[in-house]
Length: 444
Image (cartoon, rainbow, N blue to C red; front, side, top):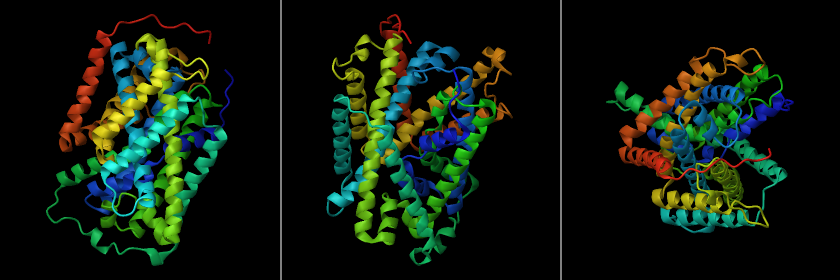
């Protein structure tokens, strides 16, 4: 296959994959768990470096074993089909959690515009559910969001981020943060480590998305040179952008207020543009959220369709509508899972911990496949594929970071961790109970 992606293309892809809606909400969660501003900003820097290690690892995995159908074929090749099935299902549930969490972010912003006074968590859940159901209906009609629309929404999103950073040029808006620099008198090193670990949970959610670089390993021009450069430039730009936005939050909202302010961006928009400007900002952000919901409802059911083609999900998941070519069963099941997660967790905080705990398994194990792939694909070395320098440092750092985050959730939210383990075990049992069918042969 002729390589198509330039250095600039790959850099923009990396930035586009990572910058989502989390930056408009997760800073509050990260600050809430951080003992001091130093811990808060350290979590965002370390999270970015971990993302860099992860993106480089996934880029080599994709280069050594290019495959479609999500992580399933990678896991099947490196581990066992039962683990491949379980982890891929786990990732689907995690993606459903991400979709629900992002929908809640949008519901929190738009509810301030539509409804007077304080809004309950249940009301936000219903608003988020309506958004998911509406776009479920849109996808049933076969409507696909065009690339042009996505580009416009991405420009809107970047414009909102730039506006938040621009607030730093108005010192009159600054909040007095002098009290935030006083660390708790009795805090020991163990409390700082615990604080840092929990702060990383929200940061990990916000930096997510780079794992999809796994899809581009064989489609980059001069891969061995441009993949590391594109990923490094992209992640470096994201780290700079996230640090700038969080510094704006810190200076304008104040560290202590940041801990208790969920819709942080609207606070800055209000200070900078007044109430009308804040309302417009919230509306634009909600549109961006709906675009994310639509994209997730488009992509994840197709992973279920691919698993059904491979014979690991029942044939019903391949069902398509005759007129619109919509994977109806897969789309419906994934939407139901999103709604269940939404009403089960009720708040973004719970969805965040649940999603990241599930991600810890998927990310650590998928990154670990590089060790098996290196052994099995030695014959590809020197053929122009991308191979990491300093290997195995990057995957080891990445895996260790996610183990650390996983342990932090187990210690601080054992019930959430228990549910995650039970979900994983349930999928493994389901694999052995389900009748297997032969993979569907396709012409392509």
